[in-house]
Amino acid sequence: MAARERRAIQRALIAVVSATLALSACGWGPVAWLSSHTPESLRREARAVYQAATSSMPDDVGTAGAPELPPVAGAPVSYELAPAPAASIAEPGSGYDANFPLSGRVDDAGGLYLDPFYLTLCGPGAVTVALAYWPPAPNRAPSVTVNDPLLAAGATTWDNRDTDGVYRMRAYMLRLAYQARVPDWSQRGMLPQSYAQSRQLGGATLQVVRDILNWEASGENLRDWSDYFYHIQWNSAFYDQRRYPLNLYEALHTDIVTDLTRYHTPVIVEITAGYLPNWRDANPVNHFVAVTGYDDTAGTYTYLDTCKEFTGCNTGGSDAPGLHTADQLQFSAGVARIATNGASGDGGWVA
Image (cartoon, rainbow, N blue to C red; front, side, top):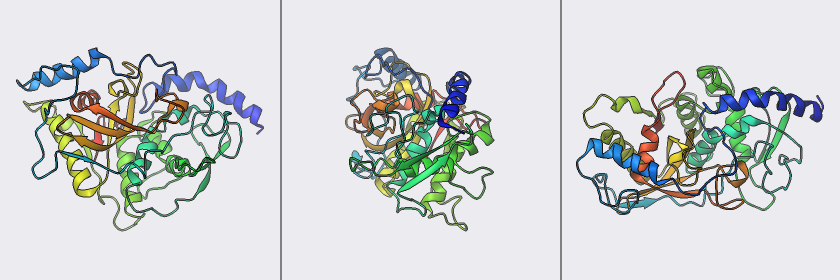
């Protein structure tokens, strides 16, 4: 099929796809973001939810600065993974946006493309970040050509290392998104398998995130992959307890501290994007990021977001580093805000 014909078909699908993506993990909103900071109203909401669970409340509502979650015994008060292996990892644009480092809406082979499902690659992106801290799995080829079965039109080619010498790992990310095959899956790729499970177009389920992490971290070991390291913590496990949501905040904090300091690997969280300081104010879409650090003295988490300026997410520069800092309570409230739904694979984190 000619590229022009493919683009015509893709444009005809965009209205339906865009409506669906609004309900999917890592959807998309307009590029003209209002602010680079989460609004005070969301910060107050996070504190109000926390206040409902505990009588201790700092005076500096809406700001980080006071330790508010209990420390993890034996762990340092702060810890940060070295950003070098992962800070530059970036999703490709959908074809509507210029795709760095090239100036046009082209893939790494110079081919024009248009694929709205590339707006939902935050799951594969966060997984790529986490796996950067594990030994390389098999089949991590420097370049990959993929077909998107969800769109059934055309192929794109991506390289791990871009022409400016930066490793954005898009070849590996797109292989995870559309080609990787975990033994228990019925489909190849995180996005098709997520669709087979949830019937929601675009985005990844928490089950698929867990499975691909274990499969790749194990070195694609057929005999020992399913429980290799990662498990899902569903938000619903904390709903009926008297201390909710404080118990959820504390469990997330413990997982982050433990995985970072003991195992030196990030935690993948599903979070309401509007609670992240690098996203548009009050954006309600579900999103995946990788937590790579914490500071209990400052009351903050550090996370890597594979969305960039050119993919319509990040507000700071054409390829600003994906390293960001968020208030721990604000961040936790953004995680807790997503109701658990096992069928759609939403509402929790993978640690």
